[in-house]
Length: 271
Image (tube, rainbow, N blue to C red; front, side):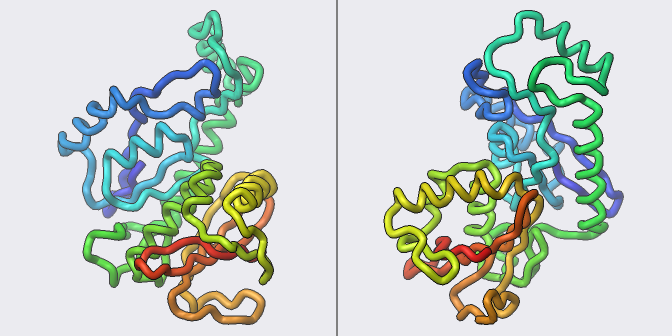
């Protein structure tokens, strides 16, 4: 969902056709690979603004749709997720249940469903907050568009394109609880509180699994340059950046360290 100035126009883009799986909640469904061509057709149509900020819910089908529509950074916003429907399996009379949800938006139409009024308030509040945070004229910069001297989204003084890219990928994986991906984006030994928290990838997977559960849903995040972060009173040396995360339950920071190849990997956690 890109926000565009100067007219302050909000473009709402529906995700592409999902790969429906009755054994998983709809929020976990992936985009159907066989239908990706329809999303690419939309991109090629010229109807999608090129100079815009992009936001998406953490749902896989929505994130993949955004990836296909733009090369620009896409910020994950948990509050933009669709109506929460935690049930699995097919509902025999889905049409009638859905109609009931619209007829009585203040109540849950089915066990595990979020009332539609709750969905409306959540999404409306999120969009208003995004427009407040990003006034008219904001530009978004991707890791590979040659504009490294400009600020990235969310606002940051970090100019290293590889660091910006790594931060966006790490945050996306955390917001969607993709533990295996978080492990791949990290190094071992991995440190927490100045001590080794994981010596192996198996230990690192256990650590991330606990972090995802204990932290709750992500609210927002910020990418900091070394000189902007002084966790524990110690300034980080060059070659490190910090992803500062705020969730529904706590705040913490993850240090991304530049490797010999020039890319960045998560190396330590600070709470």
